[in-house]
Image 1 (cartoon, rainbow, N blue to C red):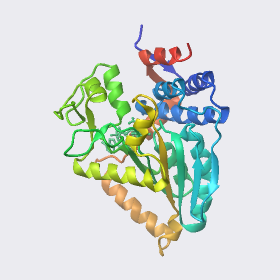
Image 2: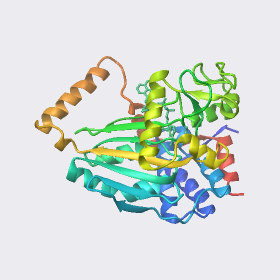
Image 3: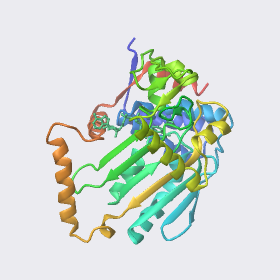
Image 4: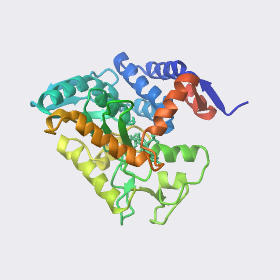
Length: 338
Ligand code: NDP
Ligand code: PYC
């Protein structure tokens, strides 16, 4: 028997919908979550595709999710919209707030969407891409559960704290990056653990602060490391502050304390900032676009790839051919409905 299961994207979506409905989540949220997970699987971002059903169901089973809570958008100012997710997951909160965010950014030049009290399990690029489709540049960040030590320390303080950026391009896909400020996402380390692979050096430490390449030790007793040493550490700190106290929401340490134990989805805030380029430059937009394209071509022209190029290629392949899911993961997902 093959150790993978082949699925069309419709089948991926149907599987996510079945599991989420089985757990009694309100239908609008089920749809929003399934869209995000299917997109993750489609773009071969395995740590944030169907795999995330395990994390979400753990939170549901532990009673951490208000399954029928509908997020409510609140106009805070000309430039700020806030959405309280009321302890439901983040994708519906983003969907509820993004239309008003886009409207405000087009009106004021810069606008922010504040999401509070959301359980967060997803990648940020689906949200960034949606904003670039409206002609906006976007910057998104969120804390998670404390599992990353600061540079020079050995105790977890930060979450894996992703940051994502998007730049709309006149032709083709936007420029998008989206990465954890830890050396790698925690979900990726968990996939290493599941498949018994040794971690690369530099991703984690054990409980004594010594370099460690055993995924289970890093996850259960040690800590993850930031990327780029003190620079990643400072970025992770910025994300804690901007998407935590600035929004009146939890830091990664507070989120973990509230949850009690790792494994479930963290609960905290998310900051989404959108810029309408028309308000920032006094030049003809075509001149600015050309200048941006020159920069991106200078990167590509020497054989380096742009972030998201792998994803866009994976997307085209998955749409045409479907995707392969590890059989062990597929089995674990089916067992979520037992
Ligand atoms: P990576 O270290 O793989 O970094 C991902 C980003 O870097 C992507 O934009 C990727 O583009 C780009 N990239 C990777 N390799 C190259 C390369 N050689 N040249 C140019 N660009 C490159 O992933 P992470 O583990 O840091 O993050 C994975 C995901 O996990 C993110 O989507 C993030 O949002 C999510 N995450 C979510 C968290 C949450 O709390 N919700 C917490 C932490 C992470 P490409 O995709 O094309 O490879
Ligand atoms: O992979 O680090 C991660 C993560 C945390 C929350 C969602 N994904």
